[in-house]
Length: 112
Image 1 (cartoon, rainbow, N blue to C red):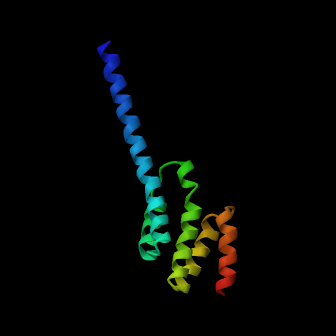
Image 2: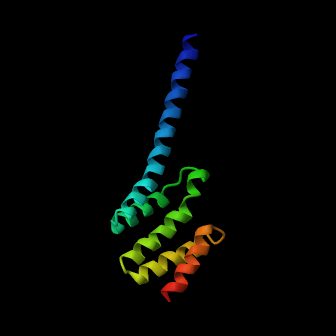
Image 3: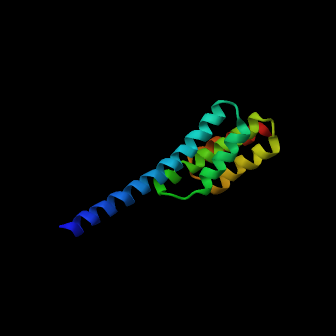
């Protein structure tokens, strides 16, 4: 009986730690969005890049194309056209079948 209790506590602890990691991961995306909304574009770019660099789960990685696209929007808002073009091209190269890729293509056409 005691072994079963210890095992249950271990499993609960592992699940909690996993959930905390996922929460931090999605919070990075949310933090980047908040920075972007507050027009703190350099901070948003940094946080989006940190978010993309982390690999947690396919479900959360589905946000990577949007994060990469938002990096381009931040550079565009900062009037850093060269970096914006590179960011939008990155979306096309890395996530060609995503909705973000179609939007990136439109943004690139507008920047040329």
